[in-house]
Length: 369
Ligand code: AMP
Ligand code: MG
Image (cartoon, rainbow, N blue to C red; front, top):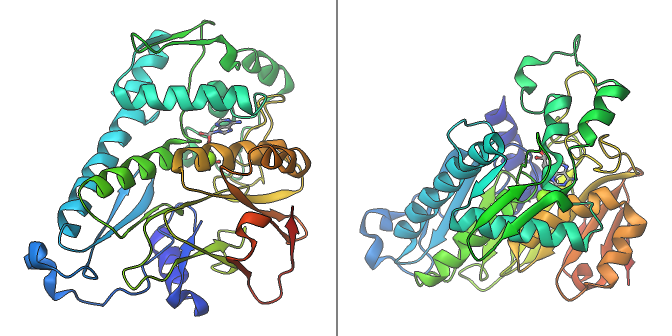
């Protein structure tokens, strides 16, 4: 099923030359200048700057494609996959042996370097977004069943009761998490608290890998981590990477527009990605209510040089809703741009990215300044 969607995405009309972001749960993109077969693959150290190497694999519950160009491309792709797989093993709430599961079982504990970086970024966002981004949302995610979607059916979606929700929501408060950065220790202030970095993990992974590839001497690379895209440099021919923003329905392979970027992450949060079977309830939860967010937004795409920030903010601005999110952008406009898709299927694009965004035929856009 997943692979079918992937194929549909890659072959959809305009998309043969585009890179698709947000074909959720599936790989959403492909570097456009890639030759079908790369004769340099077996002699990577002698490869030309435009020789492409790539790998597609499953990690973090999604399909990922990593592409890197040039003589170091092959080594880069290998290192990228290893790093992503290591982060997955560290951060997966679904694995009993992950660091996050150990923290959740023990009410906190010592953090490895990556988890410390994620905890710092997440708690800073919690403060800065007025609590819209809250990693302590995990007990509510579990109550809704997002940790066992395969066990739920449309006949039995198992919607929480008001009482269950109120009781569980009492555990959600990242203000009760204390982070000792000196000693790399996170302490949970309430018994039963649990954290989930799912709203920021893929952006952190892409950001970390892009820095790693740059340090290896690679100048052009593209990561597509389940529709979350991050680019190193421009394409080898100097043109920008083209990233499609998907139509907010997993059954469709359409896109609503294309954004052209270099050296940036393009990360989308949408209401269509993981839903409770038989319902429209989706996986982005308002920490103030415990309910999946319903505020007139269908998706929020953040474009930023900082992949971690882009991922954290895609989730946060989706929770805030359009009005508050616009205000937030105005006070942080140097750090990122946004493409909002509202339920009337209109696009609202912040001015920093407006010139690099093209709506698909039939879609209207306005510019936020
Ligand atoms: P994203 O697709 O980046 O918006 O991430 C969605 C994931 O973030 C969910 O599957 C949860 O793991 C987590 N999440 C949901 N709601 C929140 C929230 N309000 N703050 C932080 N993380 C959240
Ligand atoms: Mg996110």
